[in-house]
Length: 469
Image (cartoon, rainbow, N blue to C red):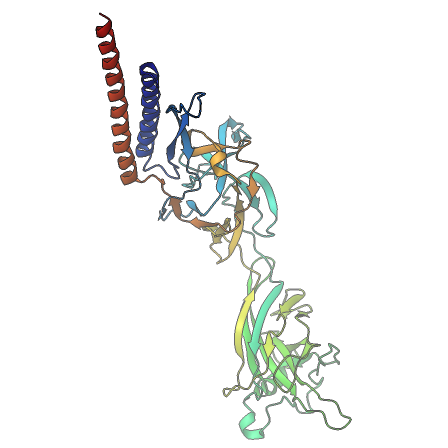
């Protein structure tokens, strides 16, 4: 390398270190920018053609090195619509271009960002601090079906009432139920007197039944004395009017072991619900659900017991709910011994509700925006648009924390694949102030050393010119 080459190399060194100090400056300036990814600097040597025996140092080129794969700290904000991605991935956003006839219009071009400080604007759309409108799918809270795809909107529309159509119930029925008549009769079984007309139905486990599904009010006391309390819950009509549903369990027969040619017989229980809170005479007080529930000697449900039972035309206090399904699932009911002789309820819920107003929203780990309503319902109202890239550092940076897809980044892949969304939080900048100051010192020293090379080369040339003189 001659003196002139040394000068040229020192100049490239000055340019490279100037580029590096610019990146460091930008990182420090954005140390508090939500979701900002710092830009590091990589240096590449450029060597001119040379022979193996005459190798010389080359010039240097500075290049930007993105750090999109390095996550910043996640910090709580207590703003429910704020979001942070824990792991790989980006939010999909678009820019607003204007308003037409009172409706906002958007660019249609997707951008990708880690900036999740989303809040609700005047139109109900979720927008971050850089003006990026979150994309995703808006859902019908009643059906869960997608209504629109595009900007996510938090709707304040009233949630309509929903009639109860399904009850989820699991429990343990005592092997020996203790009823009001048990201490005097010694019997835990419901054995009504012959005077009851029609007699309460004995429903077989295979679903067949006889006549006599109702118990009249005149015989209600006898029924209650020979049965145990079942689940009680509030159900709803189509208009959202609440009804109190009360049930009781009556054991019809005990399980028996197989003897000789006689096969084993399961224990059979029948479920009844109260038709009215007050009734007299021949008016119906209790109605059989219409399906037998069978258990073997070990207390396990028999294979023929259905996982779902439909109560036809369920009517309470003169109001019909129509057909209501009782979902007990596989082995949701058991018949194990219990010293109390009472029913032990494990799960009890129903899918009806009265009308509700939106009180607040929350974000789930899988990217669902859930609306919390005044009627106690928590239903998904939107799905957040989330993507990932094979090469995140191949994205093209834009201003305001946004990135564009490039050939190097690959196409956006939908979903998180192991990452999670943290609601009520934001991701901080991944800039480390201490690290940036360390790089600044090194860069400054390198810059000063390059200037010293230039001054030394200039002095050498001056000395050479003085020799000629």
